[in-house]
Length: 245
Image (cartoon, rainbow, N blue to C red; front, top):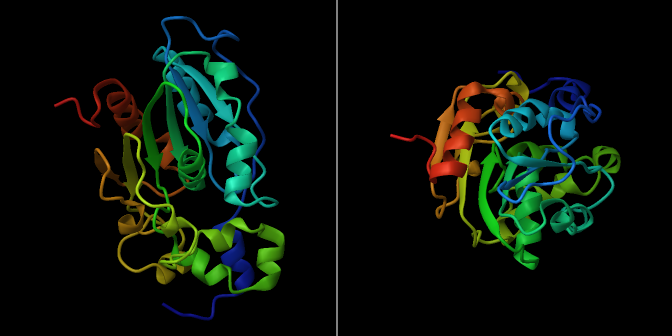
C-alpha cells in the first residue's frame, strides 16, 4: 500500500455527505403510555436522515422514536451533548428511554451521561463507536486547515490515552456494541492497525463492561441499514442480548 495518496482523496473518503433530515414520520406526535422511547444519535458529518431506515424499523416494532440532529463541526463533544440531549423528557415523558447511536453519537451520549442523569434510562446500542479513539483522527488532526474546517471534534477522537475519549472512563449504564469488519476506504484502513470498518478498528469499539458484542460484515457508514443489525438492536432492547437463542 502506498503512502503518497493525495490528501484531498483522504478528506473526501473520510468525511462526506452531510445529508438532510427526513421529514416523513410514521408515528403519532406524542408518546403513548404503553410505549418505550428510543433516541437515535447520528455520527460525524451526518444527519438524522442517515438513520431514517432504522427509525422506521423501530417505529414499526412499536417504539416511539426521537431523532437527534446536531451540527458536528462547530462545537466540542460536551457542547453538542448538552445542546441536544437536555430536553429528552419533553418527547419521551416518563417512559423508559433507550438509545441507539452511530459512531460519534456514542461518544456524545457517553459524554452527556458522565455529567447528567436521565430518568428511566433503558439500554444503549452503540454502532461502530470509536470508544478508544481512531487512528484516522490521529492522522487528520495533525493538519491545522483540516481542524479549521472540521472543528474540535476530530482532535477529541484521537487514540491518546490522556485524550478526551479515553478519559471518559467506563460507562455506568447498560450497553452493547455492534462493529463492522468491511472497509471501502483503503487509505484509512492503512492507518488503522488490525481489522477495521474503514474508520475505526474493531478493538477500539470495545469496552470491557459491555453486555454483548456483535461483529458484522458491514462498513462503517452502511452498518446502520443492515437487516441483521436492526434485528440485533430489537433483540437487545427487548431481551438484553443480540441473539434470542
